[in-house]
Structure formats: structure tokens, C-alpha cells
Amino acid sequence: MAAPAVARIPAFVRDALLVAVLCGATLPATAGEPVPVALSSALLLPLLWRRRAPLPVFCAVAAAAFVQWLAGCQLPADAALLIALATVAAHTAGREVLVACAVLEGGILLACHSWAEEGRFVSSAVALNALAAAAALLGAYTRALRERTVHLARERDQRARLAVAGERSRIAREMHDIVTHNLSVMVALADAAGYAPPDEDLARPALEQISGTGRQALADMRRALGVLRADTAETESQPLPGIARLEVLAEQMRAAGLPTALEVLGDRSRVPAAAQLTVYRLVQEALTNTLRHTPHGTRARVRVVCLAEGVTVDVVDDGPGGRSTGPAPGHGIAGMRERAAAHGGRLLAGPLPDGGWHVGARLGPGDGTAGGLRR
Image (tube, rainbow, N blue to C red; front, top):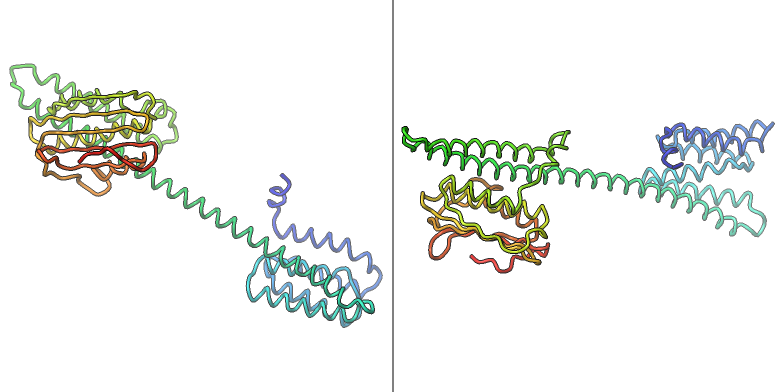
């Protein structure tokens, strides 16, 4: 809890507090002596700007330390050299750090030559070099942590952008399936109502079916676009279409003029809701393509098998086989393939040897296979 609170304090304020603490710890030892006080101040005050100009501040501190060496006085404020070196290593890289280390090494040798006790030159130099190395490593570690934080933030933003793109793609597929299917059904029903004799009330059921299909399309669109709204409580409470809705879908296709036989085998209750939505959309797209691209009188057969190892979907019709596989890249058959791949499966679509068209998919538990698919 303390670290985030400290991080919220402006950097200049933190540096001012650091300088104040160092002044309070070092200046009393030189009280009453103008030259040591002036030199200590010259060593410490540049640290106020250490984050804004790391290398110039280090050079200023090093220059003050050199003047101190010429004056022949030892000061506890020399700790400012280590802080300045750590700041250079934390905010710069490469040549600047090497220059700062070389300058400090020269200062260490001069200080040991002048002030080390007799016979302790080497041990003093080793101790001071160890402090300098620790300061440089601490600064480098701080810079690495900051760069890693920036890198993680960029990765997070990139993942967020990818998630948004994926959600847009999902919404595009949902809207394509909803609009294409329902409009195709409504057009077919409207055509049928237009051919009804004017003296017979045969158009009323078709018109009622058109109205119901339109309302269902609007409900599905509101649910698909619910993620773009702030008040999603209502859309989240509405169940997504699944395998149980396939019978309603088949009834719609029959009313639109496409005789559709449906067979569902196995226990669908064990199939996750997302996979059931994918099954529904695959069947819906396949039947819509059949309705749009085949002549009147074509029949379709849907078979869904729910097993422990996955769900198998087969949609077969007896219409002509040589027809388009989708109006645009990313939708139609391509969108169906994306849906199947999202559940560890793949989709095959194409003409049958004896005529007709077949769409087959196997949604596995995530193994990426689709065994048992026939062409």
C-alpha cells in the first residue's frame, strides 16, 4: 500500500525530500565551516534535477567532488555521487553509463590515493568500487523494471485491441446470419403470399409468419448488438438460440418453402451454450444458402449428433451442386469455418457425388480435429 502512495507523489517533490534528508544527515557534521558547507551543498543540490537531466547532474556532482578533492576535505555528502550514478543507469543506457562509471572510477582512485590509510589502498578501492557497482546495478534494474512495465502495458493494450477486433468480427458474423436468414425467409413467404388467389384467405398465414420472423430478427439483432450498449442487463437475460431452437428454425424453413427434416441424437444438455449457438448458426446458414440458391422443390435434411467427444452437424440437400459458397469473404461459408474452428473443429462444404450439397462440421472439445466428416 505504501509503494503506490509514494508513486503518486510528484517526482520533483520526492527528489526535494531526498535532498532535504541528505542535507539533514550530512550538513550538521560540517556546521560552522563555510567551505565544507558550500561543497556539501554543491554536491547535494543538483540532485533536485537528477531525473530531468541525469548525465549533466552527474557531471555537476562529479565536478563538485573534484573541487572537494582539490580542497583536501572528506565529506559524507559524497554519497550524492552514488545516487547520481544510479540515476544515470536508471534513465540512460550504453555510452552515458560507461562515461559516468569511468568518471566515478577516476574519482575513487583519487580519493583512495589521498585519504586511504597506509596499506589499505586496495581494500578501500575495492569497497568503494563495490558501492559504485551496486548503485549502477540498482539503476539498471530500475530501468529494466520500468521498460518491462511499459512493455506489459503495450501488450495489454494490444490484447484489448485484438479482443475488440474479435468481438467486432463475431458481431459481424451474427448480424450476417440473422439478417441473411430472416430476410430470405421473409422474401420467400412474401412471394408465396403474392401467388395466393385473391378470393381465398391463404395469404394470412404467410403474412403472420413474415411478422413473426421480423420480430424474431429484431430480437436477435438486439441481443447480438447488446455488447455495444451500456444497459446490457436485458440482453444478457435473453437465452441464446441453441439446439432446442432447431425445430423452430426447421418450421420457419418449411413455411418458407424448403421442406426440412430434422434429427437430433444424443444428450444436448451436456453441450455448452456457446457450442449450441454455433450449431444453431451453422444449420441456419446452411439452410439459408439452400433456400436462396436452389430451385423450388429442393429438400433438406439436418442431422445433429451430440456425443461426449463433440457435436457432429450434417446438413444435406438434393438441389444442384454447382452453386456459390458465399457472397463475400469473411461471411457465408468462410464465417461458418471460423465458427467451427473456434470450437476445435473444422467445416467441409461442397457438392455430393450423386447431386446435392453437403455441409458437415464436427465441434470437438478443443483438439482441432474433425474426424468423421464426409465430403
